[in-house]
Image (cartoon, rainbow, N blue to C red; front, side):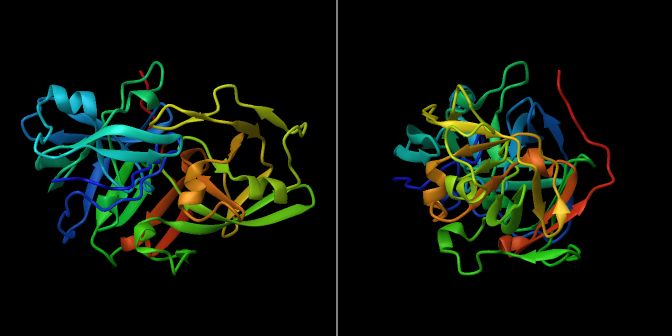
Length: 321
C-alpha cells in the first residue's frame, strides 16, 4: 500500500500538509498533558506500548502529520514493512525515504489513542546540548479537540470540541481555505516599524522556534536585501531536507494579534517554499513561532475554526539539561 501525503513538517520552519495516517476518536472528556520548553521547542512525553521509556515529542499546531524519528522507529521495530516509501516536501526541499509505522497504542498524560505515525529522519532539526527530538505531535490529532496550549502553565489540554471558553475568539482568518489546510490555524497580525503598519496573515505554529516573515511582508515594512536593519543568517533556514534557504535576521519593533502585543526580539525573513504551499507567497504573511507565543495561553478550537489568545498567568515550564 502506498503512502503519498504532502508533508512539510513545521518544526524548524518546515510544514506538514497531509491527511492523517490514522483517525483518533473525538474526545468526550478533557485530558491534560504536562508540557515544557526543551531547548526552543515545546515538548510532551509520549508513551508507546511495548517501548520502555517515554519519547519526547514536539507539540506542533502547524504540522499536518504526527511523526516519529525514523532511526528510532527502526531500532524499536515499529516500521510497517508492507508500506511503500513516499517523498516528503518540506520548507527546504524534498525528503526521500519516508515510511510509516504499524498501528501503535500511544498515550500522553491522561489521554490514550491508537495511530500510525510517519517515520522521518529528525536528526537535521536536532539542537545542540538538549535531548533529541523523538517525534512530532501534529494537528492530525490536535484538530479533533479544542486544544489549549499553555506553555507558561506547563500544560497541554485536549478538550471536547466546543467545550473551551471562546473569550477573545478570532475566527480562522482563512474561512474558505482548501481542505488540505483545514486543520491549520490562521489569524490576522499587525506589524509595525516606524511609520509603516502592515496587516499580514499569520499561521500559529507552536513547532517553529522563531517567527518568520515572507518577503512581501518585509517589503511592505520598507525592507530590502542590503538594508542596514537586516543581517544575513549564516546557516540560512534548514528544514527536514537539511537544504539551506537564504535567511535574514531582523528586530521587528511591533508584532500584535488582535491588539495583544507579542514578545519578539529578532525574527527571520525568508522566502520559504512553505509560503507558496500555503498560497501566501504573494501577500504579507508570517509563521508565528513559539518565540512570540510562549507568554500566552492559546486555544485552537476543533478543526482550527478559531483561535483564542490570552496572556497566561502560569510559570514557564522550561526543562533544559
